[in-house]
Structure formats: structure tokens, C-alpha cells
Length: 335
Image 1 (cartoon, rainbow, N blue to C red):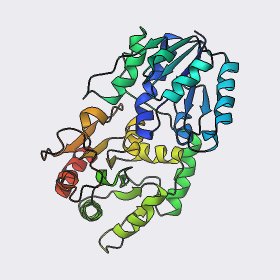
Image 2: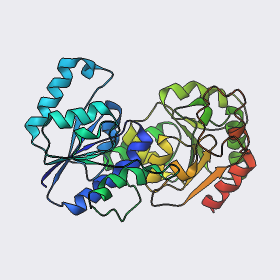
Image 3: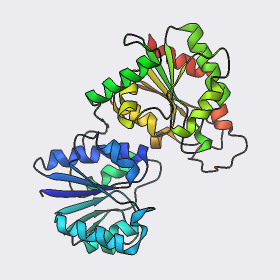
């Protein structure tokens, strides 16, 4: 096979988990061109995946929501003359796309197996998400020996990050720790006052410079944390491109984050990560990068399985992770 399409999943962390799929395909078919069908928010992270040769955007909630746009996408896939498509996404619509595009080999999960030439059985519950994606290849006979993910950090992004840090008083020889406060569910977020107390602890007990990362919507929360006169830190939430964020994580002595896309981005570039897990299970979505990771998780009874009670009024699972617990983990990585 010389021309292969991978139909990707939708979320940032899951897309990082899926990157070993491309590595395994490239190892099995070294001469093949690997393209990825994905939603717009994933295109930047895929540009840092060394095994992805092309990206095809499916803006399912934007311009491609119209029927004629979907037909145009199908026609584009048909013109590309793919030899095979591997579907990591269970979407019936995406299975319909590759079926109507006439791709001769169609492997993956689907709610309508008739659209596929090689439907994959449902995986057992409780396994890691990465193994779920790699099973699509293994079902087809493609070996997947490497269960780690890795992304590239571009030199230009390192340079632009260094400039931004210098403008904020962080010198090239300063050692930094990065706190990522974000999470796509509020239920997964560590309390803001805990972050403030951790920042105070790091400032008082080490020479590390503290940088808060996050999306633009996290910026005000970081400002609230920094209202405390005992918190000395730099607010980079919403101030970096994804490439610069990768460079920031790669430079850090350690990265502290709840279970979120940035935790896995940090792990993908070799950062030593400390993952704060509450409603989600590390066996399912734990970091699988090339560097060490410390997972902090407290079993409080109601989180024995992944919890999706997004309106939980107490959020006891995240409150159970103490500031001293995290500081002790930080100490193990800073030496």
C-alpha cells in the first residue's frame, strides 16, 4: 500500500495517543504516504507528528456541516485514490465517507460494520485508549511494538518561546516548572487555591521559576491565583502557539497538570510530568511518553470507574490530592 488514510479521533489528548498509529504504519509501509482526516483543532499538533505526510480537514461543526460540503469532501477523498483507510473514530458519518470514496480497504470501528471491509470488534473496557487505537492496526496484521508517543519540537518555536520568556523576565539559564491549570471538564480541574499554595511552596523551597500555562480561557483563573502576594509566577495562559507550548514543556524541569491534552503534549516531548487524576482513570488515559511520570490519584469510592458526573457539586476526587502530595512529587523530579 502506497497511499493510506487515517481517520482520526476528535480530542487533543486522544490525538496524541493515536500518534503511534502513524509510526506503526510507516514502519510497516515505509514508502507509503500517510494522510490524516481530522477536525480543525488537531491540525497543529499533527504537524508536529513526524510520520504524518498530509492533513485533510473535516470541519464537521463549521463549513462542512452542509450536505454539499460533505459530498465535496467525499469527492476529494475519491480523487486522492487511497489504497486503505484506518478508522480510529467510531463515527458512522466518517465510515460513510470512506465507503462512498471507494477506498478498497476500510479497517476500523464503526456503528455500521457494513461500510467496512475489516470491522474491528469492540475492545474490552478498562484498557488504555492508545491500545484501543493500535488494535485497529493489529486486527489487520500490522505489528505495533512501540506503545509510546512522541512529537517534534521545532527550532523556530524554541526561539520564539525564548524571546517571549525573556520579555517576561525568564533568562535562558533559569530553571522552570510549568503548571497547567486547564482541563476540558471543570470536574478534572484542581482547585485554584491549591495551585496558589503549590506556587507559594515552590517559590519558598526552591529556585525554580514558575510559569502557568493554559488556554486563553484559563488566563483569568491564573490572574486570580496570582492575586495572592505570596505567588510569584509568569502567566503564559493563552500566550503561546501549540509549537511554543511544546517548547515550553520540553524546557521545564517538570510539568504539573490534570488529565488533559497539555499533560500528554508535555509527556510527548520528554518532559517529566506529574498528572493529577480524579474523575478519570490513569489506566485508561495515563501519560505514555518517553520520560518518567508520577500519577497522583486518590480512590474515594465513586471514582473506581471513570466518572462523567460533570455537575458534581463536591469534586472530592480532585480535592483529595493535597498540595504537599504534589510538592513531594515535584521534589523527586527537580533533584
